[in-house]
Length: 144
Image (cartoon, rainbow, N blue to C red):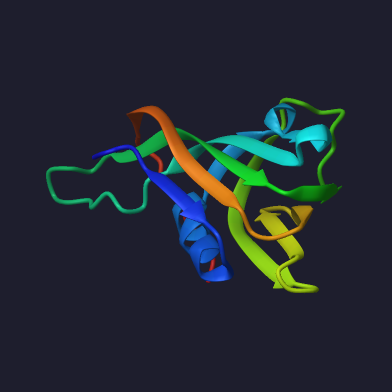
């Protein structure tokens, strides 16, 4: 499978990226906001949902990836303790709420009622795999 490289310039594109990062895990210490550059970075280990399981392929796959959001004006967090850098966050979804077009809020929603809110001038995001994949025997499961 080729490394994933996606770009988002509108809410629909952002939904595609959200689908690809569902159940990605990231460490608190890896959250990086660079206000001088108006850039937010979130390195993660993303679960590859697109890879099909079969009778002979029971293993699942994760890949190292980074979410890169530009034109970020401010960042706020909820439910994330920056004094615990080794805590692991599980990303559930990314949402966009428009304020004054094209500006708005990009919200990264994590399990455990945690979130990161990015005030953006407009949507300008990228998701890219950084290297090879590795097998994992675990598969994320959600209560319905």
